[in-house]
Amino acid sequence: MTISLCMIVRDEEDVLARCLDSVKGLVHEIIIVDTGSKDHTKDIARRYTSRVYDFTWIDDFAAARNFAFSKARMDYTMWLDADDVILPSDRGDFLRLILGMSPDIDTVMMKYVTGVDQQGNPTFSYYRERLLKTALRPQWQGAVHEVIPPMGRMLYSHVAVTHKKMHPSDPDRNLRIFEKMLRQGLSLDPRQQFYYGRELYYHNRYPEAIQVFDKFLSGGQGWVENNIEACGQLSRCYDALHKPQEALQALFRSFQFDRPRAEVCCAIGSHFLESGRYEQAIYWYEAAAGCTRNDQSGGFVQPDCYDYIPYLQLCVCYDRLGQHQIANSYNQKAALIKPDDPAVQQNQAYFQRVLEKAE
Image (cartoon, rainbow, N blue to C red; front, side, top):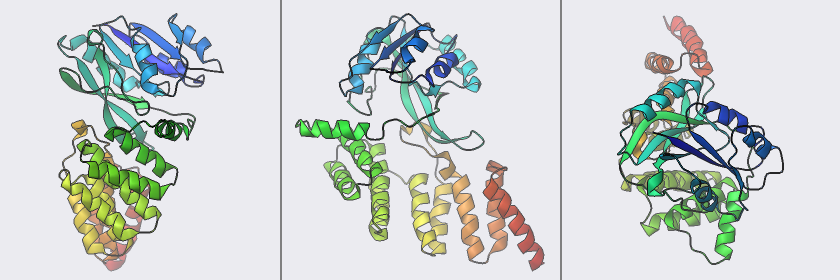
C-alpha cells in the first residue's frame, strides 16, 4: 500500500517542516499546492519534494484540494493541513495500519485531535476521512469546511492526526467566503448553513446566528450530529444575549434528534448549577457520566464530558448542599482520571481540612 500526501498551504513557514518531518517514512510521495504564499513556505516545501505547484486562490477550499488530489499517483491519497502532525506515539500504529490494511478498504477514517489539556490528553476530537483510494477519484465538496462524501468500504482507525496551531489564521476568512457566496446568489446547503451559523456566532453576531441555526434545524435536512451541535451553538447564542430560558430550551431541543449526549447534559447541568439549583444539576451531571461515548459517530466529541467534568461538577454540587463525604467521593473519581489536575488537587486539600474538622 502506497500513499500520496497532498497538502494545500499558504504562508506556513513556521509549521510546514514540523508537519512534513512527522510523516517521514510514512508516505511515498508528497504533493504541495501553494495558494499564494509570500513567505518561505515554497522554499521549505522543496526541501521535502520536487512536486510543488501553484494554484490561484479563488475562495474555494474544495477546488484547491481537488487540484492537489489530481496530482496523486499512489494507491491511497492522504491530506493534512500544515499545522497538523502525526505524533511519535501514533507513528508505529500508523505504520501497522498501512502494512496490515486490506486492499478492499476505500476510506480510512482517522481521529482528528484538535484540543488537548496540559497533560496532552485529548479534550476535543472527531473523525475525518484521511486516507482515500486514489483510483476512486475522491472529490472534495464545499468552498468552506470542505468534505469528501462517504465513499465505499470504510475503516475506522484509532490512529490520530493532531492539530497543533502555532499562529491564528485569518479569523474573518470563512465568514467572508460565505457572505460572498450569498451576495452572488448562491444557496447554502444544510452543511454550509450549519457552518455559516457557527461563523456568525464566532463573530458575536448572535441574532443572525440564531436565525441561521433555526432555519437549518427547521429545514430537517441536516446530519444528526450537526443538528445536535447546532442546538448547542444556539444555546450559546442565547446565553450571550442573557436569555437563559431560551438557552436551556435550545439544549432540550437536541433530544428530538437522538439520545442525549454527555456534552449536552453537561451544558444543561451547568445552567442549573449557575442558578443554584443543585438537585437538578446533579441529575444532569449524573446523566452525563452515564452516557456511552461514541467516537465514531462523526460528531465533535469532548471526552471530559463523559467522566471528568461531571465528576468534578458533582463534587461542587454536593459540597454546596453540605454533603461533603459524597462530594469528596466524586473528587476522588475525578482524580482517577486526572490526578495532576490543579482543581482536583485543590479539592483534595480542601476536603482534607473540611472532613478533619467534621471529625
